[in-house]
Image 1 (cartoon, rainbow, N blue to C red):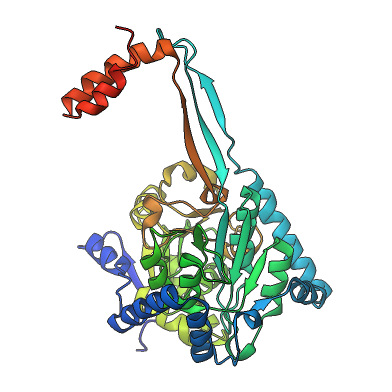
Image 2 (image 1 turned 120 degrees about the vertical axis):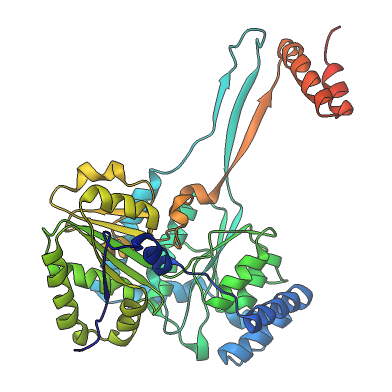
Length: 439
């Protein structure tokens, strides 16, 4: 008998929870050699600035450049890339950008103020001031892993938030530029683009150089070196997240098309061998049909080797007793992407507490969310949907508290603060509040 392409499990099996937890377990284990290399690169760029960035770009991207001026793309080149697209490509890019922009415009939060009408607080006003970040760095993978959709999903919410300057870095190994990525930068209004990548690009954005100004936050995906660099510079600048492998969880009642479900599992598995694709289904016969679809469709896939390893090592087809149990298991998994492949999905949405994005019904395929549905495709992974949210406009805005205490309000609050400060042994705090009291 041939070896199964993907494991089959049942929630009724003894030890199922432990088996599931073992399947979900993933630690972004750090490679000591990578960590040391990144630490050295960050230190060199912080010390030598542009000189170090140029040297690392020569070494890693095999670009023979004299200085940083050769590594910044003029606006005209971005516009030329946009103009050079086929009509079909340009329309697709503009349609996707329009939908992403329209969705994110609804996320903008505004400043607010109110007058405190509590007894003894006459004239006291409180509030919150919302301010966009001044400058953001956007990391975009280059070479073979070039994703114009990443430009849209990161740049558009930043611009909608009102970020003052958006600086994009994208490696161009051996001078290889992706016209769709450059066109996406033109469409989204990226302000400056540098053809640098790796830990040296993260360092340049985090610390600033003579040519590249220091940013306030760095967003965007990258390889292990980029992820390590982002972790290390956090605190000097903000970061979006350090993402793990892509994930999809499909909940099915057996009402869908098995080929569709199989391909949805493939769509995540083709990202890389560590990606995770799981099906929870109440219909055991349907699981068998999905398994047959996987076996029939896999040989057709250009990335079948990657898909096969991902499904074998981290995938599963799981039989559950009912949809209530499926939702409970889904909350334990807290997936990046959750598809409700159900005849009546809406009655189950409120049962889902932890998911980066919920795709509702048979036609809401996750791949549409990656490109053009509108919501952001930068989502929490590795069960972090339990406490994290999709990237959005709110990630590019910061909030400042506004506190305007009236003279009368200081009499009321001063006594409260005095008692609490003395209780904490902070006498200067107490005296500071007491000095505002009239007696």
